[in-house]
Image (cartoon, rainbow, N blue to C red; front, side, top):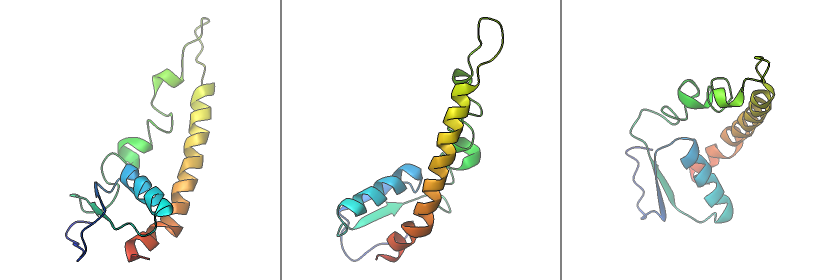
Length: 112
């Protein structure tokens, strides 16, 4: 995070501590545990901008506000089946992220 500089030059530098940087960091560490990865964030904490649930992930990705997931049928009714499918997938991804947050991310923070 911001202000923490290691004595060793990083192998990888990630700009931003959102969901994409966190995912990339976890995947890279899984593939090559010896990598020295540094993540920089200008905000006060992780996932406070686009990854924040109120800004993006809790609305669009959950299919709650995407009209293209709810097309109008020829009889004027709205088909919400795709929105429901996307919402289920989003809930599953939140479970996955919760697992990562509780089990893998702390080890990245501690350098283990």
